[in-house]
Length: 79
Image (cartoon, rainbow, N blue to C red; front, top):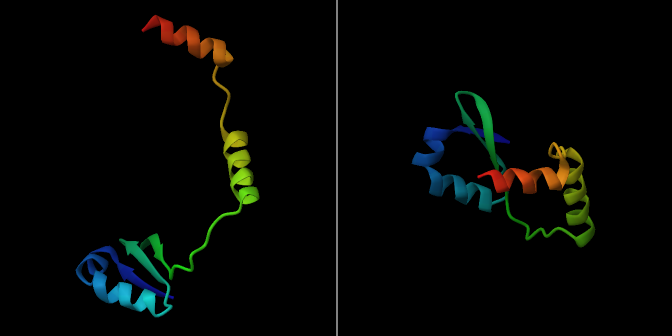
């Protein structure tokens, strides 16, 4: 896996995309910190089960608003 700085990625984007098209995975960095991964596209699609699992993760990580839905309704009425 090759690493490329953000400036070089911008400057040589078409060459980098050619490499990715050939199957190479490239990490784009900014000041040495990885910020993106360019990988070949394989037409991946998420199954309905995978989508449902992701929604459950999001729902579990979200905190309920103070006062619940009723609190949100009342807050909206104040504005």
